[in-house]
Length: 345
Image 1 (cartoon, rainbow, N blue to C red):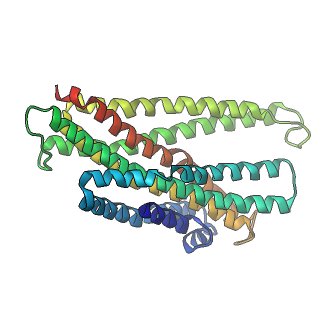
Image 2 (tube, rainbow, N blue to C red):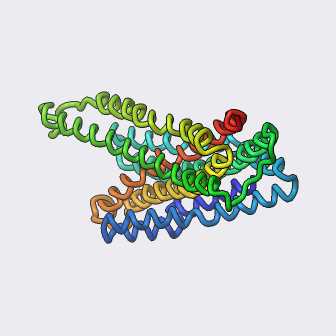
Image 3 (tube, helix red, strand yellow):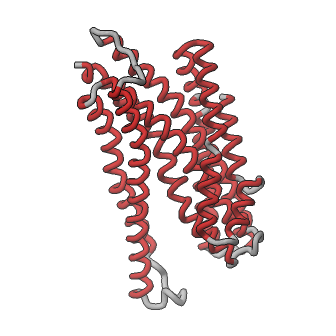
């Protein structure tokens, strides 16, 4: 639980515009969108340092106190406050949608100002929730990997040992480390394809609906929502299938030892990517909010235009790719654990 609190504090520091990183990101926006995006990626990468060290230390301490059972209890400790984590994570989208409704309903600048402030807080709470989720996923996955190795030893007629000099283990580590990048690439590609379809639809409506450009006619927003919903489901099909196929294929083709390395490799890279993406996206979003609050020239300034581009880049990171990685890590570990006896045969 202490580990979770530290991860939450780190996420808050790197994503809230009360602190230095986001303010520096807002200043960078005045130099163009490229510098803004680079700064957002840099903030996210830097934010992985403390959580990783803390998770590693908590793992060692838990193991020292009660062996792998202690590590399992560490995972349980983080998951025990799941209700609060879900509530904190859900706050962000609620506040974001409230701000959007306030703008569409024309409720005035004062209402919009309050809604924007709540939305900025929501970006930070969402980053805290995602950081907590990926941290607990690392703990849980480590426990599942240990259970997988124990299952192999239980069902195997020969002693099972993992050595870094084993080429099968190294091969598994390399392939496992690649999977989070492949998974993220497929999701990013899906976001891009759906965005292109929505842009085409919006352009079509501007062209075909008389008076829409002048604000005299209503847009067909349901069509855009339909494109987004169907596109999201279609884009998730291949990554979802691969999350199951990869551990099965590695287990049958390269063997159970290679699969053990595969799970460790996916855990190591997936943890870093998950934290980096969640915090990069939230920092870029709040840098835009900080400018919209009247800083660095406010709305309509060159800094604001750059920040909007940075926010557009950051949204898929924090809302699509980052949150999906903790699910990927746990799913592959569970599939491997369930099928371990089959891989031995």
